[in-house]
Image (tube, rainbow, N blue to C red; front, side, top):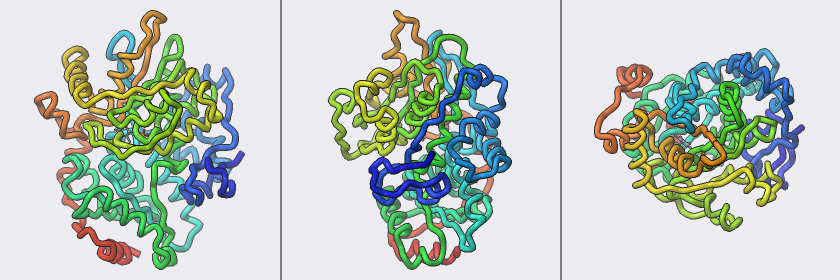
Length: 430
Ligand SMILES: *Cc1c(COP(=O)(O)O)cnc(C)c1O
């Protein structure tokens, strides 16, 4: 097995090369040449395994021996050292809560796995590894926490000052040590432009190994399969539907990859906000990226979902086959807010806007006549989004991980929207 580029021009890579490169030079995405198949015995024994052991079994075939089994087991256990409860909300619908990790979002799983792989591979380098990330909120927090105190790795996070939520800001600014957080006087797009320029800076590349912790990196993408396996391990009855709040579609593509490995799932639904490129694709089979629109579920505000090609790849680009097990639906912010209120009133459940989009889409698309049941992924804790208190009319209590952060001083540095100013700070860290 190897990883090939979905654009099929760059050379193939092994696991290590694909993780270190992030993206192939031809701007495609790495994809495994063979999808491992698990047999019936594996699935029958699932509920006897700890989540860490299960993670090891799921990831091992993808690592190609590039990490020793002992190290991989350690990485897997550290990656999923928090609960992922399956909470029943109605007779037909359960929530898979993926927000019990350090930054209260599912991105913790991918970020923790990737940081530890990079820490492992960077032991062989004499120069420092520097991870550069621009974030609009959730990604940066997960990456910062994932890489915090990982030996041999420096992290530089850029976020737009004043444009992330209160909780996200605390998660981004209170770490320190090997994590440098820059509050830029500018927009997310400005942050991203500067991050790209840093990554392409030849003089800097001579001083350190620069890399991004982009969501398309296979070390962030592949471990997202783990919680689909963990959910099925605890599921009784006919295979469920998975409904996934979707932006770049990495999370959903990982679930479909798990399904291609044999994981029993009836079908998948992508739940989208007003950014409806994928729902439109499923009506027309034409891919038309569009500028993103700002919504309540802002981690899903993506106009060109870059992981969608991985889903097409799983189905060999056969749209008819894809449509048998996959659909995509979009709902508005008005519906999202109404659903959050209904979930609270009828199920006594406080959902974040992303989870609410998925709950609504699942509820509206279950075939009750055939007894379908489904699981939606609750991808973030509601306290991460300031809109939740506005919509429900009350503030919820902060989890202890956040109140602890609040007592620490801010370690962030304010910086103008200026490439040289950012570069100087980075050079000072090398
Ligand atoms: C990133 C994110 C999503 C979207 O996940 P994709 O893999 O990009 O589809 C959904 N919900 C939350 C809370 C997120 O942070």
